[in-house]
Image (cartoon, rainbow, N blue to C red; front, side, top):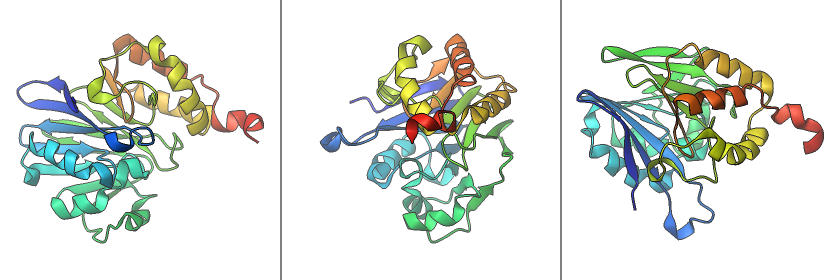
Length: 251
């Protein structure tokens, strides 16, 4: 099974997607994309996943970088498929762990006991220099988590969008090629209508990400969207009625 794929590469910089699932319970296991950005001798791991996939993700990361050079681990929000392995990562490496300030104290419920290396993100986000370029943490609150961020890598021009753009029923990550927006529109709709809080938040996020030069959107579930397909998604998402907009059909 192919579990990893390089989505950007030059001699100084790589972006890799890992997609690990559990074949024994694949009917009930939610497949998740984990991403690694390597710049020269430093790296950041994005949404490393649950405790169930920790060993596979750890081994995959070590193929690309010495674990002592893993500088940051970023959790876009608090869900177990994103942050469930946080306690294991805190023991196995010295990376600083970045998460919304809204969720820091909840991490103890995943077994995290050492909070000394946690970087709590303010609601407005932050910029971290990464080599000669930067990583931008972009607010994505209530899409679908109250404390949620997307991450923009200025070097590769990739937007790691978390659950925004997730297509649950479509092939994911390392198993899928870049897709056309129209081919996954139907699989996007049900998830986004239910899990995103409302159109006001969709519009706010789209306004923010349009400030950046983005070539690829890489979600936590599903495949990447590039170029015109990414821009088609933005146009669709900023006009989507979802969550609270549909309250009468939910209650």
